[in-house]
Length: 99
Length: 260
Image (tube, rainbow over all chains, first blue to last red):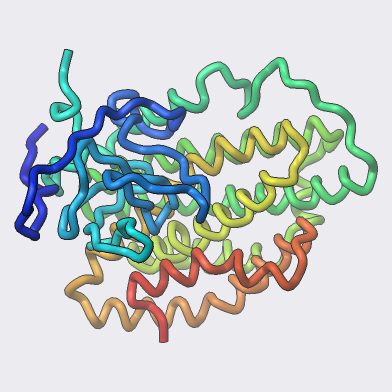
């Protein structure tokens, strides 16, 4: 499987990104090796980490093993969407679908 | 042991991502997660206390209409396999055929559980006319060989409606029906996601195609409203709450640039 730097931020980082150890949270709608990168969203009261963003298409939380930055590209495997991370209100990221 | 980095989905190249998520290999790994150990979509040891007659009647009507929708998607997806413009889309559509057949099977089996023996007759008797008309419209688009319009009708409109209605229903359903619905909802994420993303890519540089799909949407919107209203009335969703449930569909058509 080929890879690229699809998740590289277009914004110059001013400090190193925090790394996250991801564990499975019970989300089981993708093959085993990808499961820790996604979790069910608990609704508006669900506090997102700086490595998380809600997929606007299927409302699953997308997770990254490193801190996200505006301009990062992330994939939602459960609904096959590609999106770009943008800064949202209340100190959390939102994602915009790209085609 | 491979590190997170080795499996990080977010670093995949775009073509590799599409090939991965539209593959049968991905589908096997996905459904293994939530269907293993189930029998006809639920835990085989699950208790199924009888419903009162009013609840039973209402559920039978709802399930009959789910069967109409799933039959539409099964027949539509079957036809779309031959129309798919590339191999990943063809393979994905074949996985959707399998999903839709499973959905029809579990809903038919649930009707049997509720005492309906002649499901074919009961489905015809209780079908929402708007849903039947929508199914006919979808099949005409498939028969015409119109991939874009058929994917829009099936994977965007029909699948988004089903996802919305099933999620609403699962919150209030009896435990067995709720578990069946949860498995179906997990499948639907792939179906409407495929529709939006496949069309989004195809329409990105095709303003004429987008204008044409706006016309298709206009033609179908009356039926969509009728189907939504019927399904949500059957589920006793208060009229004041129904517009909220149409939000996913409206957001999708907006992202695709198909609003007026």
